[in-house]
Image 1 (cartoon, rainbow, N blue to C red):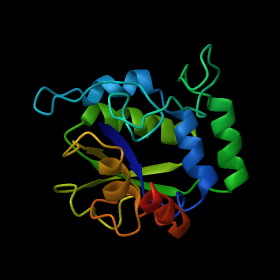
Image 2: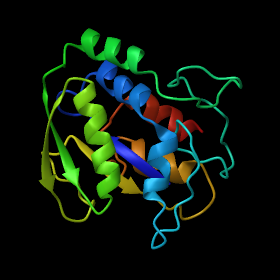
Image 3: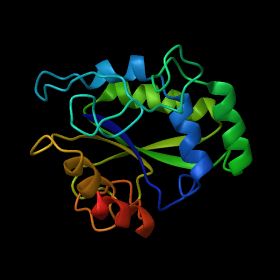
Image 4: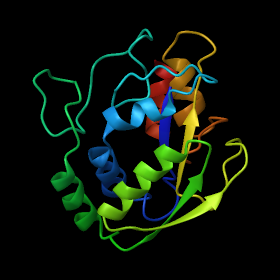
Length: 181
């Protein structure tokens, strides 16, 4: 599964409203195929969550959309909602460092979205995504699960002690929920 990763540890994405703004602004239908590289065999499923539809535990859930005929599905970006969230977060005009990767078209699309939201974008060429460069705010990753389980996505990618937590996201309450699950 392909992911756009926002560094939740540094401005502007240390603010939840700024992260949500990007989630609302993403055009997932245009972005997903850009990661569908034959070398990676990435499934281009359009979803709003980390767990892909073919993994046990997946349930349709997508609050980050303009409107939807089916509850839980993605219909399109909501740029007005995204702009409101950036304004509310007070992060407009912030410098955002985007990792320059092999996915040049995805980088270009994300850069356009960030600029439309009022961020100033600069680029940093990085090496392999593991470990992530500490001074990058937006990066990209492809994740292949070792076995078909939601735990193989949540724990390594989102827990405080996750070895591949590129977003630097840490919430002890969420960690407890992951462990309980």
